[in-house]
Structure formats: C-alpha cells, structure tokens
Length: 249
Image (cartoon, rainbow, N blue to C red; front, top):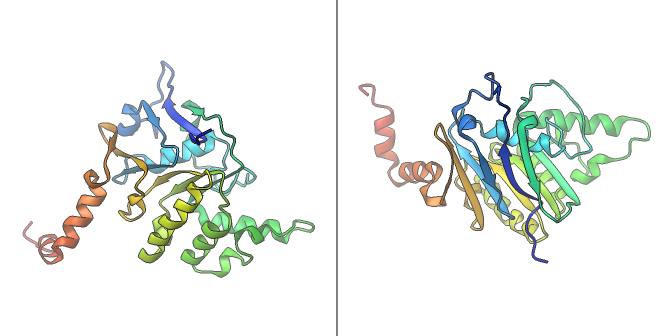
C-alpha cells in the first residue's frame, strides 16, 4: 500500500455562537475552512500575527501532543497559555498508524529540555536523554541541542510537527535539515512545518499554504512572499539597504 500520510485533512468546526476572543478574532482563522495535508511535507507560512503557530499548536494538541512540545508521552505544563482552538478542529486521519511523533516548538524548547533532565534525575527514571544523543540538551548551544534532537530522536514512521525550526539553525544546518527530512520521509514520515526560511521551505515534494488576512491559500514555492522577499533582497542588497535606511521614506 502506498503511504498516504498519518493525517489527511483539518477543518474548523465552529458552533453557532462563535467565540470572539483570541485566536478566533484573527482574520486568517475567521476565514479558515479546510487544509489538505501532503503525505510528505506541508508548510504553513505567512507574516507574524497570521496565526501560523497558533494553528500548528492546535493541530498538535488535537492529535494528543503536549502543548509545550515533545512526544505524546510528555504532559508537563510550565504555563497553560495555549488557546482553545484545538477543541474546534476536526482532523481526519489516514489508514496508517504512526509509531513515532514529535511536536517541536522553538519558544518552549528550554522547558522541554528541563523536563527531560528532570525525568532523568528521578530514581528509576531511566535515561530519556539517550534518545536525544546522550547529552543534556541544556549542556549544548540552542542550535546543537535542536540538531541533536532532530538527528537522534526522530526515527521515522512518524508525524513531526515543527514550529519555526530555523530559529535554532545556521544556514548550513538548515540545508542539512532538508536532507535529513528526505531520509525520514523515505521512512514513511510526515511533516507539518511553520517557517520563515526559504531554505527549509524548499522541500520539492510538498504543499505550501500561505496564511493571509483573507484566509489560507495554496501557493507554489517561487510564488511565496518568503522566496520573493529573500530573492529581491539578495539580488540587490545595496539598493534594498539604501531604501530601507532612507530617512526620508
């Protein structure tokens, strides 16, 4: 049987008395109807404030992942700040059963690393850190600790939900991440990723959704704001810098 992914679609199912508080007052969320996931890689992109991370978090929580990140075996709660959006999502799952899964969110990665150390320090707690490379994530730089997680913890046959992973990675590591993603995809893995990086966004066999105040629209790689803005700047940095630093504008 061809691999068709672990999750197929997500749609918003709001009651008649639609909530008016955050995040339901975000225009993108108000216009959101349905997303069809690619069986390999699906990207959510857009400007800050469009609700990318909020929607990604809601998808992860709806699927049983911890709001602050980790696998489904993590249930720590440093501060309950996640929205109730997950309660209004309907996610259709594929016929395949995942054997692995992970939700990575950059903003709470420190809390995740602390939770791993805390569990390993408990009597009889085992060695969770061995699945992350064997060295405390707190004893490495942010980039090295994320890379250790990505290279050691993600084993394949799983769903990996990543929120802006480029915040921890150099350009060369972002390129290497694409290569490792492909190896995991070939091991029947599925990715859902939010990113501002044109490098991480470049996986060739993927679906890209751009989030705007008008809703969520499928776009091609070179049509994305991410690609066009980076390309425009790098093609002529002197002109772009001159415009940006012009006090008269």
